[in-house]
Length: 462
Image (cartoon, rainbow, N blue to C red; front, side, top):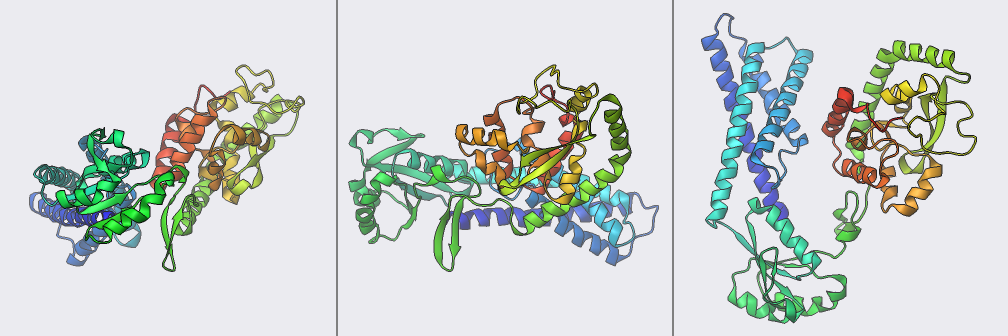
């Protein structure tokens, strides 16, 4: 039921956006060729083709920007800003696609359309929110829910429903096995009785759905509860007490009619994996071509300022525990690790004359574009660590191993947030897991853009 309502709610957004985009395009066409009529009208088929591209590209980009997901925590201002970013990106994609498939369409019409689209989409979405808020305030079509279980799991159920109030659900109360909890509240929702009061509560209160949120040590009472519910017409849902074990991409799956709870899964599969690899190959090959002159100069400087090889190949661990050699311009003396592996420190006396500059500016990382091109790494992902450190980290930090479910990256969400060098490993893991859980190509583009705008500089890079 939750999924059906969520899909219905988001489908309304999609249909509304499509209609709004069509109106905005028609208005831009009218303004362009009525108020600024120094050009002849373009052929009708070109106009219809451009409109068709608009109605395909914009919804696809909006979906990739998570504008068709329910997000109660997103404020009005942040939603307008997200619409603005998605509109700009969609317009750029539209211009690019139009350029490759046929002659260029009226540029002024496209510019006017982008402005009209942003204003109208933002206005419609804000009105959409206001309408649903008013309907919820008046209690129109609310579905009432009774939660059986007032512990940590029941609290999470109430919290999740409160975060998605736009779907029209309301928790009217909770039941508990502990008499001392009756009369208290969980997130402002009253605990109205014991498990044994279930039949009485269903008789006294209008309940559309019952959610069973029982911890593992209370599962023995499930049979007695289900015997009561079997005589009722309410919807019944079960939230298994396994959420503490759910990590990356966990959830409920179905295989041949058999329901399976996935606690941990690979985040990049199928087309997502193909898209990310194609993205890496394209950008790394362009980077290798464009940066070849600069890397040639740096190679000469490394050779002239210190004895030893130009490149330093260091063993790192990547996806699925795969070991590979990550290439960097050598920034330290050849005998830098004669006493064993250790992190670099400020004013490290092992650095070569040019090494400090290369490390501070991250120019020593440029050869890693070759690692990306051959498939050992990705442009964006968790930074690969050395096996000698990983064994220690795995013992100290829970879920550390999960960062190896994707390819390592030249840059990443942790790096652009200042977590480089000798910084908190635990904080880095939190940022890495957030990236993996929320991956998208748009997220990769955002990280690359922030890296290009100064994310490669860090006070912790030495």
